[in-house]
Amino acid sequence: MQVRTFTPADSEAVVQLWQDCGLTRPWNDPYKDIARKRSVSPDLFWVGCDVNGQVIATIMVGYDGHRGWINYLAVHPAHQRQGHARDLMKRAEQVLTEQGCPKLNLQIRAGNEAVIAFYESLDYADDQTVSLGKRLIPDL
Image (cartoon, rainbow, N blue to C red; front, side):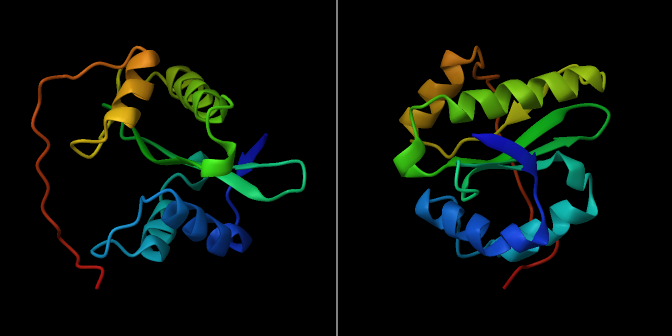
């Protein structure tokens, strides 16, 4: 898998990938999420491509000076369990460490045991926190 920075031409393939991976939700417009990420640290939005140049993976990385964040880590179901997600996380951790990021956070939907197990295999642990959210700008 070759990893590169997202370009606008990737939009349709990325949204399709997120749909194939079950990451989209009716209350989040994925195109707006892409536009928002492109306005803040667009160099930390990566796609992974197969040998034919097809998008098979994504990751959005963020850092606010206090914590790093991972969003939209996705690998197409036909390409899972080949180390691609692990490679993207390793790259994200390296880039954030180079930027002086002391801690990396991510959120997983409750009940998604397979994804929880994946992150635990990378030495992530439950921080025993409750994640709260409030929508400031509705997408729909």
